[in-house]
Length: 490
Ligand code: NA7
Image (cartoon, rainbow, N blue to C red):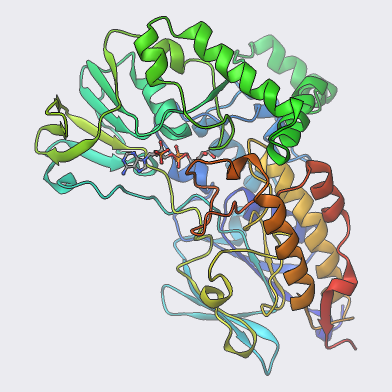
């Protein structure tokens, strides 16, 4: 490889997507560095440590395609297990030494003259790279509620993604604000240990029942001996039928597939909750899958326990010893968990990203975060996003999505590495066409059917891939090079 073609790549983030990029670059013998703001890898699986944390994608489908794993303890894996999996993969593929921990990238500025990127880290050091892979994750900026008196609470109060380790939970009075996946999983896990558990519910959620079972040691041995058994689960027809049904329902809310999803969720509620008053409390007034559908197998059982109360009233304020409701009810609490979600529209922010001609990402992302086919950004040459804005959402394996995105990115990288181009970025016209079509389609999806959720940008448009999963797979198979501005060809 001559010097002209010797390109250096920065990967921002050592979570699932950053590791994927690093493994692929290492295999291709490319020079790269991984910058990670925290002191360990794993991204969302490092940050989230709450009791009950479980991935809603079956474990064998939530692995890299090239790194199957025989050791999963159950059909749906827990957070700590998944974190261990990523640590193992990073170690097996020799990636860990390439990761610069405790090194947050605070600025990425494109240098017009040299056609490369200057990255500045939080220690004030500058680094020059030709290519930047943004793998900084989606749900990593906790959103704390604007509730009066939160600071007055004398017990433990923290966001679900900032769990206080070593906290004694047994026989405590615990309040959980929020009924997204996090709040539902935490409530499910804590019912059996809490003295009283109050689940503060602003909006109820539809729940899709899923199965959960443990793998025996014999089964794990079978997985070790015969990888086909793992593939049978990963590519299980019923699982993929469900995925495709779900996808069809998302993009066509009037479809029989969405009707079936609604029927399943409604029937599950009807059949599970005995007390009619509680059943009505838990019945959403919006369509199933409008908010991210909860996949769960225990919440409805737990919520009917004597020590659980679903509070649907409005919170007036938090006081030293608990939560005061507007109707005068007071809940005395030792622990208050804020399972109130994330600022899902920030992605790499607050890092300052300045592309060509001084274009800032803040400007480009006004009014909404977006990217060409969720991967590239006009005006930001040689910058590529994994799990960036407008990618598929909705109970799919983000690993599978990132792997497909990598296929697309890798073909663009090859042009740069071959020396055929210095920079690659989408043409603004191609991007605008994509974005126009995407917004039109997104407004027809179930996510636009009348509810609030983290899928929506601040103008109310879903920040999602609005077409079929197959369309996504097809789009990622090969970039349309006529949509790209490829400069500096030798
Ligand atoms: P979500 O899904 O964004 O859920 C946040 C929950 O917090 C939701 O029930 C909100 O109610 C509730 N919330 C937010 N602010 C308040 C205030 N101020 N008062 C009361 N309730 C509030 O976040 P999760 O962490 O559960 O899940 C995020 C994703 O992580 C999940 O989809 C998976 O992909 C993994 P609302 O519905 O807005 O009325």
